[in-house]
Structures are given as C-alpha cells and as structure tokens.
Image (tube, rainbow, N blue to C red):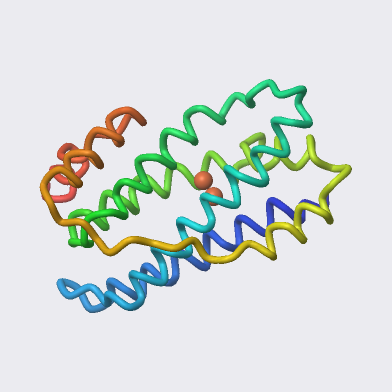
Length: 172
Ligand SMILES: [Fe+2]
Ligand SMILES: [Fe+2]
C-alpha cells in the first residue's frame, strides 16, 4: 500500500535520529550546532503532526480524537520540555529512550500514522504540500534554571516516564 504521509514522517524520524547521533558522536562533548539543528527539526516535526496531520485526521474522524492521540500529545509535551534545558549525556539518553517508544507508536502497523493516513486519503496531496511549506519553528535559548528541568521531569511523568529511573537503568 502506498503511504506517502507515513513515509514523509518516518523519513523525518530517521533524518532527526541521524543528526542527533552525529551531535553526540563526540561524547562527553555534545556538538551544540548539530544539537540545535536537531532541536529545531524535532519541534518543527511535532508542529507538523499536531497542527496539520493529526488535526486533519481528527477532523476527518468527525472530530473524535484518535485512540493514540492523547498519549502522543502528552509525549510531545514531554519531548518539548526536555528540549528546554541544555543537553547533557543523561538528558539526551532520556530523550532517545522516549523518542524510540514514541516514534514506534506513530510508525508501527496499526499505529497513529496509518490511522491518520487512512482518514485523510482524500487530501493526501494537499497535506503534503502544506507540510512541505512549514517553516522551522523559532526557538528560545536553552534555560538551565532548575525549574526548567523540574518541569521536564513532571511533563515526562504525565506521559508515563520517570526521568530518574531511566537514568538509573543507564548506569546499571
Ligand atoms: Fe510525534
Ligand atoms: Fe513523529
């Protein structure tokens, strides 16, 4: 089956992963220019999902939210909050852990992208045009106040992830 929107977003996942992998190749140093490219790309990706693709699917579904939508939105909030503090090895590890699970729910057979693609079959080309026209989101500088990290941890908990537990597993 031809799934242009699924492919569009899945390719963007792989593109962002490879930028992040390059940014951390020099660990413990993180390449901040590459990390910035990753951060803007990921925030723009989330915007394309929430404001265009998922929204169009919900509209086509008589405005009834799709089964995965609420959880994915919580995860988008958590991911966005994790992008606020400056990256550390620890933070990037947690981010990759969440992204792995998140992207899987979107990409898998019977997952979010497939459901959205089916619902929007009448407007695939128009959605692709809209997606390609999206400009990168503007970002604020990193905020390293403790409150920013606390907010990220709380957003993660709301999405079902415990930052400190994920870090502990890393250190075991
Ligand atoms: Fe997403
Ligand atoms: Fe995605």
